Image (cartoon, rainbow, N blue to C red; front, side, top):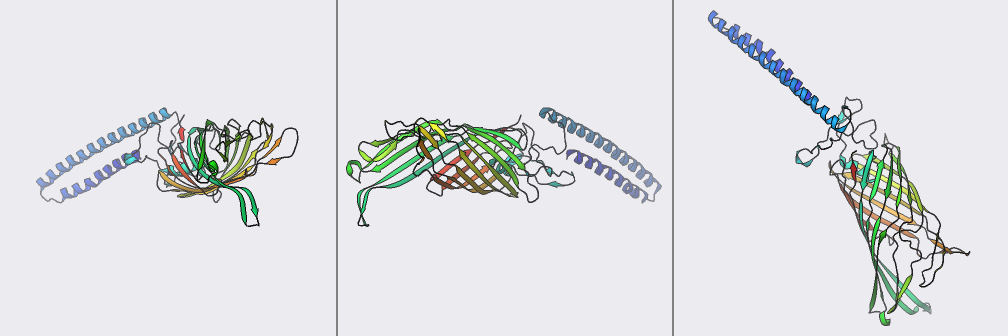
Length: 452
């Protein structure tokens, strides 16, 4: 661009010189006096000589600026370790391979005035047409759906807080004459607060394949409340259980099978594995409050599933500028696991085998890019889990754990701020739509891509 400006300036000066000479000549020959004609010839000659000198100076100036531009390009590409290629791409969002690319500023480059990053123009593959650059807010939408594979390492920490409040009515008695209940009625309330820090690492070998690993840590604080102290419904007892520990470590891969072209969306296949590194939910004992037999609470809290698991599914993403639509489906399979204790009774130990229920999840949503750096999103997310079963060692039949099947649906809303081409922090808030889902959930993600 600078070189074109310099050349245009030199051409304009040359045209000016050529245009000035006839004008001066015409004004000189318009004089009829010989003395006046002689003076006009001298003035014309002096003016012509001045213009020629200015033209030489402009050419020298133009050559110096071209040399500076060439030196600057050489220094930039020497610093980045890459060859100078016009219209070089640093980031190519999925679906745009071979059609256009997004140029990225070199390491250490500062944003343009006003806080907006200087984004070079996007060049068509033919080099004959230019279109606006893809906003980095759209790139952030791809990153959230694990569809922006940038070769290298991405650190993806996640902070989540979830709150649940469940109330159960417990009836202990019988119905007389099909209309009168005789017995005890108690209301039990469970409040759960779960904080989770889940650092994840993604490493993309190519723009179509990447590996990931996650190591979650959880802190749980749950209180159990029930009426019935001293056989009075007006008095309430409470027990609180806290737990801090490692969750189930997981990992897997994402493989982009299809890039967006025409009406076809991006198609990503993923497979994930999880190991039972967290505290197992099996073998936890139920304790009865001495002052209130209606209140039963666990002596520990789980931080994992207690079994090995594998999941696999597909995601589709379709960009309709400025909207990015996405959807996914995932199937979870849990392996049978032998455990040392399946009993919930105090002072009783019963080894056995557990068969956690398999699960199916789906997600539907969209992201709207409001400007170059900011976007908002909305989605619905649902996880449906089958009932779990246990069987004691030594034979016997499988026994279904009561109320172990769940349907946890949420409405999730979020916003993303693309701070730089390497940093895409975003926040999400979820509202529970079913009883099994948390009442509300807040998550903060701060993915950062490292340039190597």
